[in-house]
Amino acid sequence: MKNKEATARIKINKLLEAAGWRFFPEGSAPANIRLEPSVTIKSADLDALGENFEKTSKGFIDFLLLDTKGFPLIVLEAKSEDKNPLIGKEQARKYARSQNCRFVILSNGNLHYFWHLERGNPHVITSFPTPDSVMGYQKVINGARAVLYNYRPHIPIHPDWPMVELGEFCQIKGGYAFQSSDFTEKGVQLIRMGNVKRMLFDHRNSAGFLPNSFKNDYQSYILKKGDILISMTGTIGKEDYGNVCRIDIEGDFLLNQRVGKFEIDTLELNPSFLYCVAQSAQFRSSLFSNSSGGVRQANISNKGIEKVKIPLPSLATQQAIVAELEAEQALVAGNRELIVRFEKKIQSSLARVWGEEL
Image (cartoon, rainbow, N blue to C red; front, side):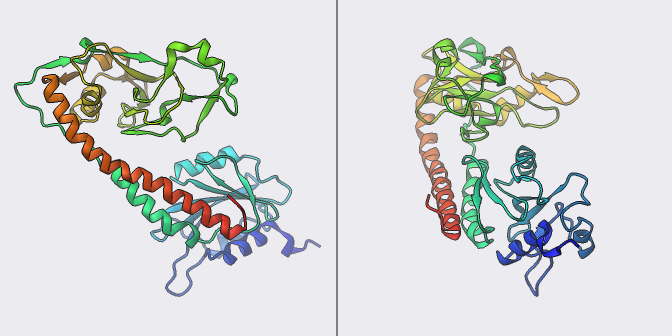
């Protein structure tokens, strides 16, 4: 006869409850575990999974652990005892990304892994994290991210300024179609569209690497600190491309396909002024009007970007505008440092919970 206490679901339920997660409301405390976004769990739903998740079509189930506002915070992929928790971790990553989660737990009831998607590979844990070990610091991070996401430099365009096509003073260099079969665990990082956010060089996002020898083989595609990049592919009807960022850290990188690099060939255009102009609604609107694509995919070509008209005041005016905007951006950049510091606090807090050394 099967020992019910030895089944994966029972064990995982106990681990969740011991850490302070709730399938059902307890007094004034709401449930903070869901099977699907915005769908409340019922007892019958848990029973329907089977004692060892044998009644699920995939042999595992994804639980969403919620923050205090009811938003997904952690994805828990629970598997039957006969399955390795690491099997299908890439599927868990995709689901976590779709729910805007950075944390994943992989468990079969006996073996558990915690995975910070932006900081390396899953590592073994002996207990589940508590809500408080993550949420307090996460609130500060979310506030800092909101500042970074919403800040846009504003340039009041004077009617006397000439409007010129970008291509008269700057060319867009496209990236190379590197093969995924060449990817390595370490080496020179390949900069892909996911690393290019609006005003944010997100080099940690799904980082991919190529052999260091590629720096010699593809010298014309090497990127450096200060280079300005743009993402060139997105979704029809969405403004999820045309993102412009500047590399703000030291190091060598390689330029991947569908990422463009601004190459200014004149002293009449200040690079920092162009960077600010490229964040404007007017610039982005022109980009999208020049795009093409199929049923779902939208693309903007090198020439399409170069046809966008930009204001070109005198170099002295450009420099004055840049000086003012850079003072603003220095204040905004403090939020980026705050995020880094508080992410380290989360890691330290979790390490203390599990008795690990960072």
